[in-house]
Image (cartoon, rainbow, N blue to C red; front, side):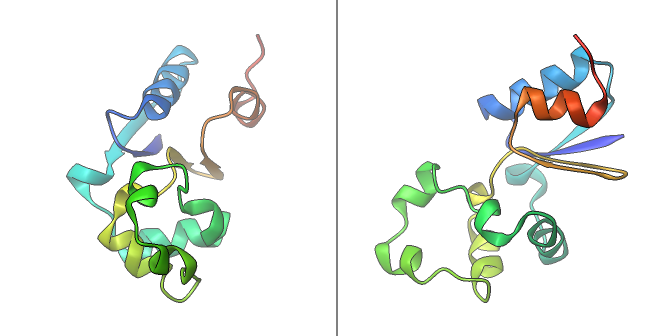
Length: 117
């Protein structure tokens, strides 16, 4: 079973869930807004992907942050910011046994899951 972390109304999350379903890969959505995130989860994904890759700098939330917060973001304070603003977490994040993916790239997913066209 795969867990897809994201926001249910995010187009990329919808695309990911659809792709997984089309390829008969069981998944469940963990919506940041409804179910939240905790410090343990954030440390886990930062360990997998690096904090710079976890922060979604394309998001509206990022654009709405003040310049001081953006300029002073680092490994020491990123968890606190992501706990306060979970929509800053890049999505989707797909986790499963021996699977760690961030974002959606169809080619990468096909390779990871051994899917051939």
